[in-house]
Length: 214
Image (cartoon, rainbow, N blue to C red; front, side, top):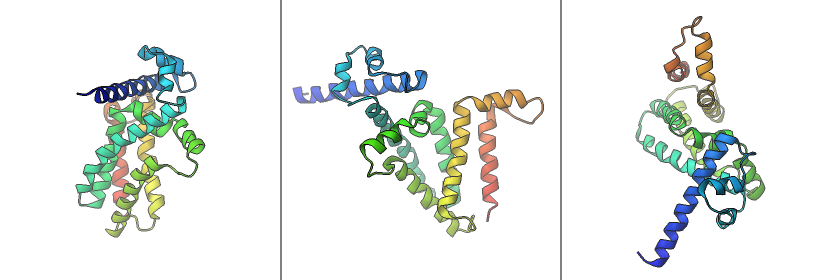
């Protein structure tokens, strides 16, 4: 390996360390409480080193946002092979939930933190939401295919897509923040709640409801 290749690998490794440290701090301490100095201390480098790669804290947040969506799209790509549109929609919901369970820190940066969207509005006002739009396009296409197969034809494609996303996102957010656990623990004596499978049970119930919209 030549000198140039070694320098490039060192650069990429350092950027990865910066992003990983920032992600931990954003989730643990919150975006506002996280500073470039804290991120630098986490990886034992000077703040000046971080500024060589990222302009500011919002630049780091958006880089994490992009990295998370790259991982997410890789999971969704294989679902294009699911032929039946409603089963593909079900598989997309499951993939979304599993991603949130596997990567709650990325999920928070991608779908809960406001800062990456603020970064877009400030630095790229001509763009809407390129990362999210690529994922939503796949959802819109799947919903449209479902409608062509006879499902939920009395609802607009965009409205049904946003409704489906909101339901699954709500389930993931409640789970990640611990609200599901709290609900199950407090209501279990009075309701037929299964704490360990509440997320899956509610998702299945939602899919049964929309499957009947035919």
